[in-house]
Length: 163
Image 1: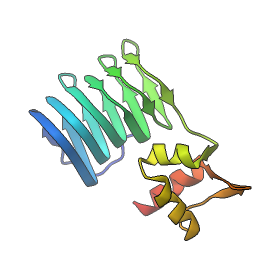
Image 2 (image 1 turned 120 degrees about the horizontal axis):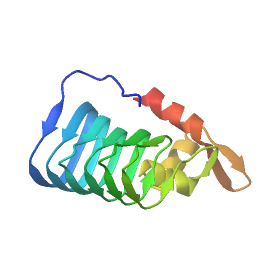
Image 3 (image 1 turned 90 degrees about the vertical axis):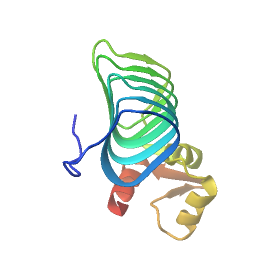
Image 4 (image 1 turned 90 degrees about the horizontal axis):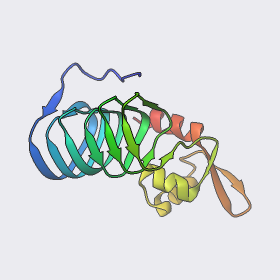
């Protein structure tokens, strides 16, 4: 698994928390306690072996060794270690699952052409905002009649160029 090198500093959270955590700048975040709510982060997120998470998670690079219940979207890759227990749907372009990991849910691995609706769900952004980007020529798109189609790899490259 490739981890993005951000900074050698690790924010290690070992507490019971509830709410919404958002990290707009890339971080190395490790959660070892209980968390409930929503979690959005850029950079590397590690859910430690003793962690119990009940949350929707959006991260770039995600490694899970503990228990996660909720919807997961990793924009780069996801690793489920042998001790991971994941109950929920996953959207990710690359995934690795070690023997012994438990995964109950659906896994969507977008590639090729995706619709406006699929892109909206993948990016967790309203369709109207994506349409605005299309109208302003900010995001690569192909048109088939009235239908907008997005090449997944081109969108990933576009996202990477903006971060």
